[in-house]
Image (cartoon, rainbow, N blue to C red; front, side):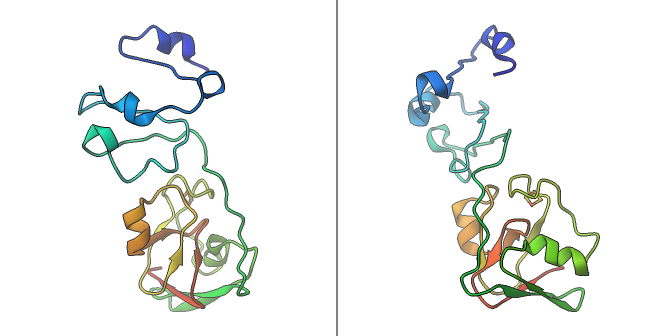
Length: 163
Ligand code: FES
């Protein structure tokens, strides 16, 4: 709301503060939106992956992280196989996959470490990743072809990655 006075003066801009108006009714709000319109959401982890009433891709910009899911592996951690590096690293419960990977691949790309920027997206070669990010849509999660290793885990004892 830092720019509310500037935004309120722009044509076509409607501000809906959640603290006074409640949650935005997206279907109603997007019903009159032009197909090339842009929607800015302060958060919106559930919004990715579809255009809803827009009928096309929905572009969002995030201004903060989605709720952080606590990291805990009931099975006691897992191993990550870094195929290109030829190394296998153990990821203990309570330790992030990214931290474990950085030991073996110091130059691995990352930024937010909270699962919302997409910088650490990594190709999954096999296994079943457990997603905790707010970048991938439902179809991408189900496909399991990539994951955000800063917050992601593994549902299997071993997770082969393209690193
Ligand atoms: S570092 Fe931002 S999503 Fe992983």
